[in-house]
Length: 395
Image (tube, rainbow, N blue to C red; front, side, top):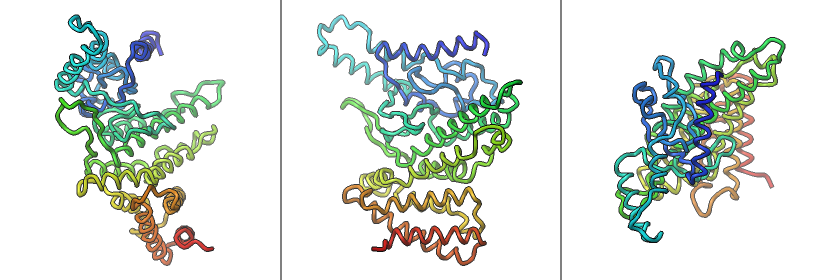
């Protein structure tokens, strides 16, 4: 990259780090205050930036599409409204206050008034450490690193469109005479990692809880569950973009000249799948169902939607491809792990629900194993036997 562009990139990274030296923490929720449509609006995003805070992890506007003709001003971050406000709150002199105790009510009043004036001043908790690119900790889907916009499904759809533009060109753009394909392979690995981030952003909507710390002077709830319809949209997105084999990421030409392979992609599938088929996720959904009866995406609904998508061949009486067989095996192993009483939390219904789900799946697999083709039939028989052994362990 040329020096001018590289200078701009260094400027935004160093601004973030200097923000830390001034006492600012990560604001992973800042970008969630921007409607996805604004990220494609050239005039808006070039004026305001794609996140209100340089302290967010929102390095590039991956939502923007080529036809939007957005310049560099709307592609990478800058110091924003939140940052200026945070510095003012932390450093502005209050001459009438003689002690820290006297400053506190004044600072609180500033805070309440500023938050009421615009959502761009929202602080999204950083209680969300990054582990293998899948944030853990807070259950708030707004507080995620490397995400953009107020709708992870829509934003990630645009992101995937851009990845689909990039991937077929990697070998053309990055190969150099006299060199191996290592640079291309490294770029492909980063591309799959970005794809993995999109899936993590979406999956966190399932069971999501908005956590907005408030003082008693501020109206509205401090805790609010994610809209049920949005959670079901997240599940539909994962079925379409992840669990249905993403063949567009299969680059056999690159695989033949480098150490990369499609396992990187199937690992993402299994990671997300097993996060949904985990005791913590089931327990979270159960807690929400108990706290907000009739309003939540229940554990039973989530598991049934997940099963219907991952095992769609059962309903359609179709053969199962090798990649889908691998995914279905991972699914069954995830269910079997849920049957371990040690994974059940307290006296919740998690184990009961897991057993009922396993029995339902076993019955469907047993029925389908009589009608399908050879390798698919063997696959279904294998899964049936695994579930039967887990449900009826032999002494």
